[in-house]
Length: 246
Image 1 (tube, rainbow, N blue to C red):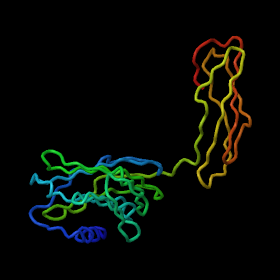
Image 2: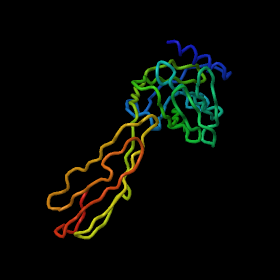
Image 3: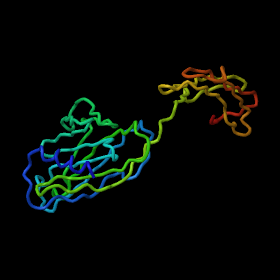
Image 4: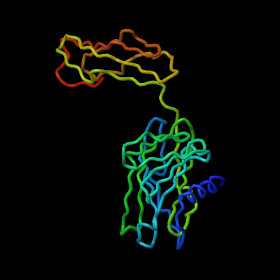
């Protein structure tokens, strides 16, 4: 694969001494998931080295997608996270405040990147929060690792599928209202469309529980683009006390 050669060049640029046996790849988790492109997922990369020496495991490399949608490298030697963006690596200290690192189609907050050695330092575990967006579809997840004995070649470790984000969000405030039998209660419904959304949203209520003697109405009954509507819950003198979902 073309990116294997590029990754090797990136590792070589670190000027590390390569000797003995290379590390082994253990896992990426989660290894199979679907998000809508707006969610940040905390990935954990794990590599191992039989020497039991923390210096033997020098870095972990992750690649999302065959088109470099998100390519990152964590260096345990200097505790940095690097992200590839259109031909250039940008680097920040891991676990410290810094600017968001933007990959070709991902965002990584370096302050939230962390790592630790486990099992008498034979395992290097790296946690990287990643938001992969803009590239809808299935993305293969590859992993490689660098150690004192060389480079563990890329292996496919999972799949991340990105779906289009929802065109809008709907919120109701307050989340609960209180009223007496025979009186009304009101709430506000807000429609917030994502950029480019200009459609019309028709508002309706599902069925109320049997015996509640409740009805509801919206004003207005539809919203085009962004906007708000008033939701009124009507009760009767026969509405029993208690809690009813709407």
